[in-house]
Length: 150
Image 1 (spheres, rainbow, N blue to C red):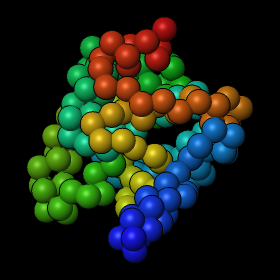
Image 2: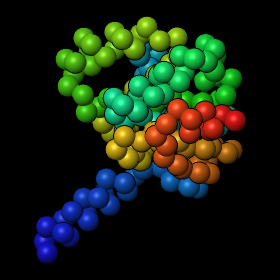
Image 3: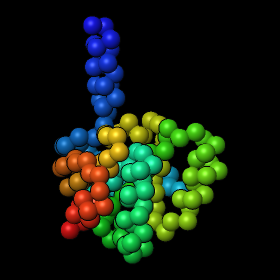
Image 4: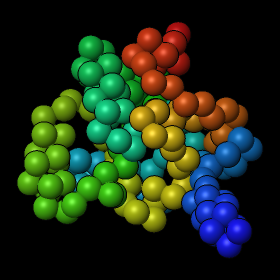
């Protein structure tokens, strides 16, 4: 019984700070793959969060088929949670690869990652209206990602 209670409390604590419908978007600064600082601006309409390699591949491949200013034009922020990646791998393998992409990838640290809810192998899509979260959904495919922008 104690194990079940502990598991429930751990689950609740994990999502206690995650953005949900009605919440104001976070105001902290987030570095991109080039060490440039970004803030989620008041006019942001969509936040995409990829927390795994597989979801990052889906978002990356999708964005590579779009024009260079796609994220900016659509007022979208793309966030990758690489906080669980060993630092040597992120520093010497992941970041050099990310620097080849023509779009910003915001990289959250462990504390910032708690602000965004995620599900295994799903991309979290936050819809933002006037600086507040109006919808949160989880998607798995390029087709679903494309539908976000239609």
